[in-house]
Image (cartoon, rainbow, N blue to C red; front, side, top):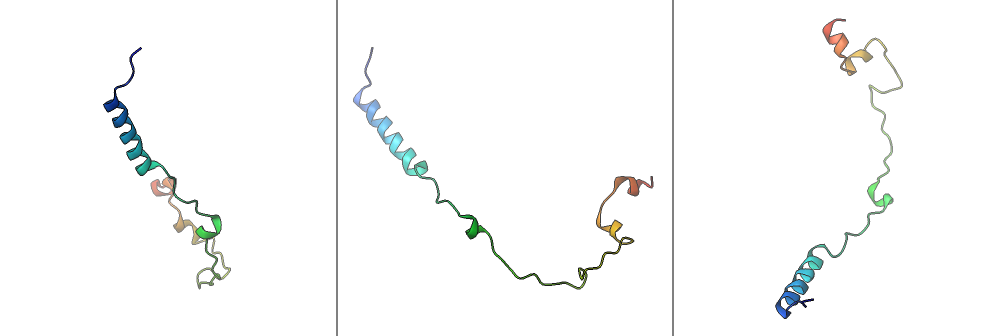
Length: 69
């Protein structure tokens, strides 16, 4: 069984050090409360609690409706 030469070992150690320098540590974990933001809801004029079923069709795309089926 052959042993690795000193230059192969040095190259492997250098490659491992380069890998560790680049990928060695994961980024810090971001907590849920740091990702979310609470805001007070502002009522808009169009969403003032009214629902118009006659006009609700124009918010969606329907292939059957587009083809006149």
